Length: 109
Image 1 (tube, rainbow, N blue to C red):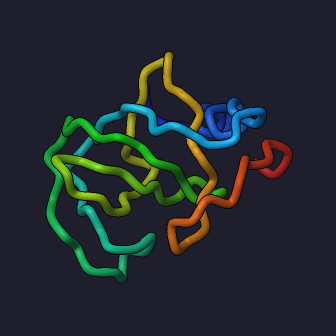
Image 2: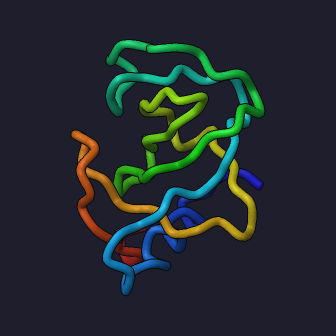
C-alpha cells in the first residue's frame, strides 16, 4: 500500500493521547536517497534500495518528508515513496529540524 496523505495523517493523529510517539515499520517503494535534512538540496548519506525496511520516526505535517532509520543510519526520505502496512502505528509530526511538533491536523489535508 502506498503511503498516502490520508493514511499517514490518520497515523499521525492516531496517538494524540500518547505522550510520545513510537516509530512504525515501513519500506521504500523505490531506491531513495537518505538525506541529512528534509530537502532534495541536502546531502545524501546513502541510497536505500527499493523495498528496504525502514523505521519511520515521524514526518513533516505536509507529509512530504519523513525521518527514518535504516541499517542504523537515520535521515530523511521523500514521504511519497514509503509504504506501510495496515497495522502501522502512529508517528509524530516533526519540525524540519527533526524535533517533535505534536499531532498533525487532518482538516488541512
